[in-house]
Image (tube, rainbow, N blue to C red; front, side, top):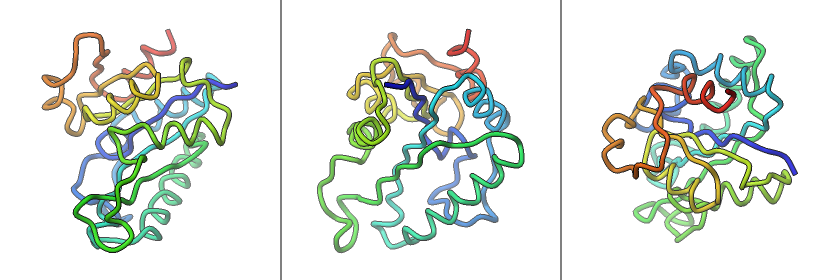
Length: 181
């Protein structure tokens, strides 16, 4: 079994923009590319787990999400970094059609992490979840992972909702450096 680092996308890897789906609006958080490259060099399996309720709300499609992920992957590749797997939850209780169903994947539930562990033989006890919301931290803890809150995105506001047992870092690069010490 392998160790992994699960990364939230919006507010952790990229600058938070409500319902981001257009490539022209995508911007990396400072240091995020370097952080992912460091994880790759350390031999850790890197998995993005992201809630994408904009699909359920009809703001954009699953194809739009996948196109943006391909763009992010291409940008990372140019810098010698990569994401090993991408998981996203398109559901939301106030969504439309088949997306308005109760699911087990939407964070704070651990479904995406559990599915990644099953598919890729990941040892959750030796893995870490990094994100900017309490939902990210709760998903990681529920899956049995160590969790780190970053202060980018919503993290500075969310910090007051996090228990003292959770590590807090300024950004993804700081979080990764603390992991690799």
